[in-house]
Image (tube, rainbow over all chains, first blue to last red; front, side):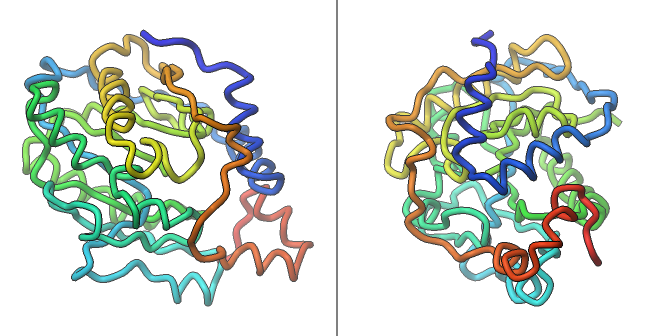
Length: 174
Length: 109
């Protein structure tokens, strides 16, 4: 399906993030070890699947604990590796993006630019997906050392997805 | 235990792919708004639909496809309208000799 991702596409997206970020992303991409790609086929049509979203925009409900920005100010090499749960009916204004590496005016204006819960509800209504899961997830994408995220946050997110009988997940690295 | 079927929607899909993501929808949109601009509900819905379709249609582990949407202006002209400067930027500005550690992934504790 779809058209191939070209060198011109890569150049356009890398040019847009600026010189320093381009150097960092290019080096980190090249350094990733080759590994076996995990593969779980979709066991049923999308129209019968329960779908969950994961966004790296560091979204927390307004009555939930913010992501720790003070900790990152104290040690700029550190990023808060925790995660938050957003119920399926979360809409613009219900949650805040606690992220110092993206333009947070975007999710403040429209949550669906980074976490499309309203759009997913529409696709549920038209029958394109079976359902939007009861819970969706967000963590903060500036994590230079992934251990605490992978060991502390990912397993409980997966456990909750399995508990809610999620079939498929759309990851949205912001 | 069975895994979960995932797809990723990314503005830096080569990076996402290198990290081992099995199905990657690359989109030529600005970092920080992968679904589309605030207020563009119709556009966001079509991006979401196309990315979700990959869950069903991707046939090969590691498949990376380009989403068939284009941003209305060159990406490098998109200006940030808010947000907080990242502490690491100021930190490195004052200590430029540390930049190679950020590039090489030799991250201090």
